[in-house]
Amino acid sequence: ASSSSSSSGAPKRSNLWSREGAGVALCALGIVGTLVCYGVLQERLMTIPYGGEGKGNYFKYSLFIVMVNRTFTFLAALVTSLAKARDDAAAGVGVEPHPDDAGGIPRALRPIAPLYAYCAVSASNVVATSCQYEALKFVTFPVQTLAKTAKMVPVMLWGSLILMKRYSWQEYAMAVAVTGGCTTFLLSGKSANLATTTTTTTTAEEGFGGAAYGGGVVLG
Image (tube, rainbow, N blue to C red):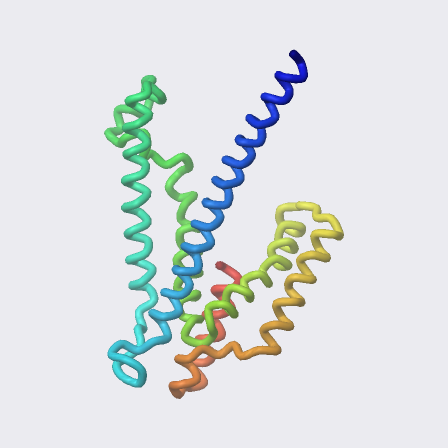
């Protein structure tokens, strides 16, 4: 009897692992695929002139793109929160009285932290995204993405000096190895973007591009 029960339990565990593995693979594929499409569209928007090759003008207003992006993100989050609140109410979850219910704001939309706590995060996110779009005028998206890995070292130093965190030597070695590999790749290949090589940029524009590149790397 024991042998039959153990043999019947093995296929169940196997099926569970296979379903979980398929779910994880599907989620990973969706995330990576979405980010790849996002990067391709970003670079295409900032480096290809409107009207065809050699014609038209390049898109210049990075803050407008950020505003549109954040607007659609806000709407998606709003719809998701309201839908979740409706499902929770239908299931009888989270319907108990709350001392702040008289505020007139649905509980699903109430911020968890004080509003001022979101200011620094929001400001840095907008600045970082704007720098990211501006940097695409001067470097390719793969170069920009690889350069972001260089922030591992300053983040670890910041955590050690300010937050008093402790990292193992293996973690420091990994951060230095990743930064060194990306630096070697950046210095050995072509990093300039098509928009830079096909147009004439002034010293001031190149300086702004470098500042945007560095700001995007540090903040992003």
